[in-house]
Each structure stands twice: as structure tokens, then as C-alpha cells.
Length: 210
Image 1 (cartoon, rainbow, N blue to C red):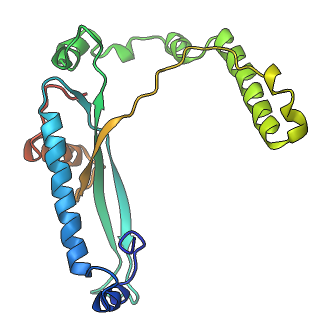
Image 2 (image 1 turned 90 degrees about the vertical axis):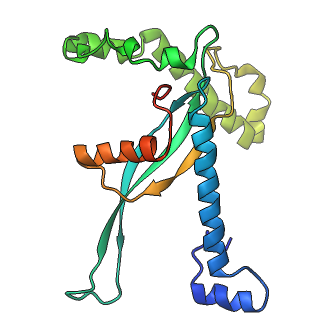
């Protein structure tokens, strides 16, 4: 709790002397071991040939500010990358290697430049029936909220039924957070170094990654 709350070291050191919490050094060691264990679990999952994984990653920048900036002691911009390993569902009858194979994307290579603009827009836009269903369900959802908050409207709740639509089954996502990596990702070279860090240095399998 103190670590997540960014409590100053002096406060933690004082509380540690009285036996109320662990020392700041011990907390740092614990976080390091948790990070190493997270990498071990992610590496085990990523090298499982029966699992199809996805590795979304993104860069974020933050500035380490100083109280009194000078010519030799100024604010420093830090470039870091965060990533998370997600295990995707594999449909029955297929394997993770088949779905993640590059051959599946060979026939669509460079086709995004050949699709007419009106066709691309038409394929991603919802149909009139979908828009009508969404409008009804949104109104019913707001009415249900009002019925729960206002007692006089609650007696009419049996009249408010959401129109049935295709519902995806709920399932807990299997995901593994990876430690941040100190590297800028705004250039092509930076992206290559990030991929090299997670796949080659991190020991992740590249055959079943989307």
C-alpha cells in the first residue's frame, strides 16, 4: 500500500524502524522478483505451441523533473515501452500454429490499397437494422437505470426488455504484464529494437504470435 501510494522514503524508513512495515530496499527487491516471475510465466505461455498469443505494446514518455534546473542538472525525458501478453481463444478444429501462420495473410498482402473507399467504409459501418437495435436497447437501458433509481418508475420495469442480440460469451482473459523497456518507439529502428527485446532477448515464440 505504501509502495503504490508513492510514500516518501523517509516516512517508510521511519515506519520500518518502529516495525510497522518493511524497508524500502526490501520492497524494491520484492518488486524485482515479481517482475522476474512475471517474465518466467509469460515465456512459458508464449512457448506453448497450443496457445495463440498477441503482444500489444505501446510507448509512453514521462519527464523526471528537478527542483532547481541548471545547465548540468535539468529535467530529463524518459522513453519507455509497456507490453502485455494476451492468450487468444483458438476455435475447435484449428491449431494456434495454423492461425498464426504468415501464409494466411499472403493472399491479402497489399490489398488495402486496392479496396475502393466506398467499399471499405461500407464494410465497417453498421447496418440500418444494427443501428435500430442499438437505439432501442440504449433507450431501454437508460429506462432501466431510471427505474432502479426512482421507485415510482420501478413498478413498470417488467415492460422494459432489451431486444435480444448476438451476445458474446463472457470469459476471463488470460494475460501477463511484462516489465517496461527503456527504449523510444517513435522510429522504425526503435520498433525493431522493441520487437528484438521481447522476442529474442525475452525468449518468446514467434510462430504463434499475432
